[in-house]
Length: 452
Image (tube, rainbow, N blue to C red; front, top):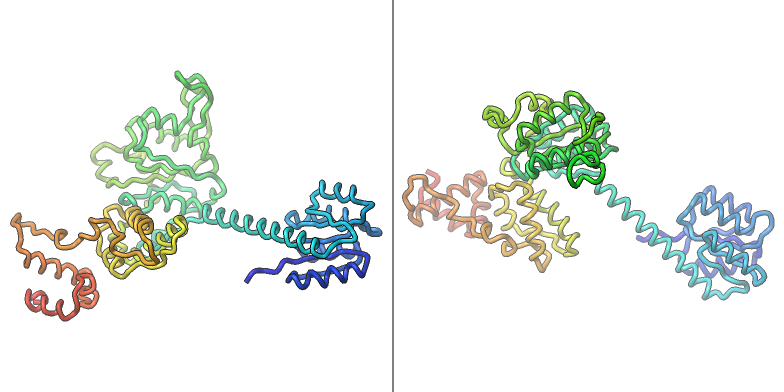
């Protein structure tokens, strides 16, 4: 239900005041009236009004004083001046000071209705825009991690616990598990949350470019360096720097980063003055960190500096209970972005998604749902909206390791066994996934002696 516009009417002519109140109440406004400018100021101290309709010329406290007070305490309030013919120039002066409009006496009631309606609409728009900005800020500042998986909830608890300590953190896990999201989560709950959060993918740059990105350079440091450039370490001062794919960093860059963490200072490329470091480092890798250390690709001393606390994110295949939650989250997100009314996911689709391995993890699931919403023309995301390889996920997934090409019956038996195992022996659900009724499934189980 839309909130009523609150209107204050101020006029020392009581007949005019009663007429205005009578007419505007019929328009549905919530109205307070007073014939005193002094009392109007007292009302403004106690209540917030959306629109103020005030006479300009009054004793002791006039309309200009009311306008100025409104501007001070309620910048969004629109003030409409009522004035006699002799004071139109003063009314125009009032508009220069922020009045919305002026109405000349004797006024026409239709004109009053129109001006008040337009002022009210402007107030509504300003409120909606402010609420929208606040919502966007909240969305931007809030890190949303959708999960009900016990192992993920434990990781979130640990992340929140270590966030205020300012220690360096290493996040591990497969690609697409949300390592940067966890880093942002730590930043959000840290003492540095008001500072910047900057991220860089160490595997996306050559050694020279990565050094330039992290440390910056002085003007004239090399050909083309026509201005001083601050590096990300300097720009993230007071905040957090997320170093993704840290194990892709070259050995010499690892030495430089180790020195920065130890000494808490560094030099820009071509610079002689030390730049102090006030940043928390969160690093991440999708590789087995111990194997990378043992192979000599990653320095053990740098690992110890970064790995004060390790947060390991499980793959989506180990938190399958989150798949429906995440699917509906992404459905809502992309339906809003694409301005579509897709509100449901068919049971067949959820079954396929729940039984898929997701090598690309959460990122892959998001991509699948985004694609489905883009293709959908109705309210339900159906099987036809899934990628071909997911729709065809069936017997071909289940291979024998013997090297022999199995018969169709052998493939069907293996597939039914696998589905029953995945659903914990629930025959109703298995029949739904297989696309057959329970009686047909029972016959196949008996025929292939699967339960034996």
